[in-house]
Image (cartoon, rainbow, N blue to C red):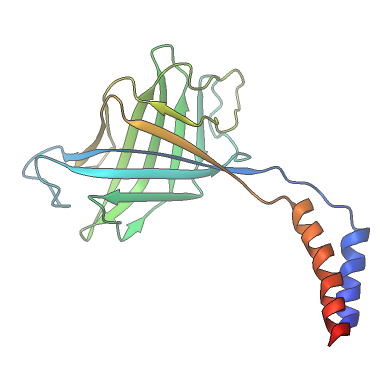
Length: 205
């Protein structure tokens, strides 16, 4: 066991350490889900609608899949949705899109499938923000980072083949929570510290 620990220490010291400065960004907001037609309501939402909370997670090094200067789209690594406090049984793949517009910046979370109440439906949620929230100047962009922003007007989004629209009212707060990921350098330093400690504890025994 001592030999294995010694070899691990030598490998960590000799092999060059590549530092990763990746960050995870979680975009999220709240709104109301309403059926498009009162008699077509497989989720049993009701004509008055139900509150929802949605969030989408991306790594800031995720590749932009749009080749337009004023638009960027990123595949989500994780999505979360609560409808009236209840989580769907299943969430399919999704992406988050950003539009840099003079009339207001747009953020859209698009989920391919949401299984709720035993029925799968696509869902799109859109929010309009001040046009100073983010700015795009390149064809391919990184996910924009901003602490929070307030919706400047109400907005509704409807996905194709969906029975529902997701509405967000003026004043809704949109957050972009940034979570730094541990760099490989930090992990290596922790390992370097841990190995001598392990040797010391073994010798003390």
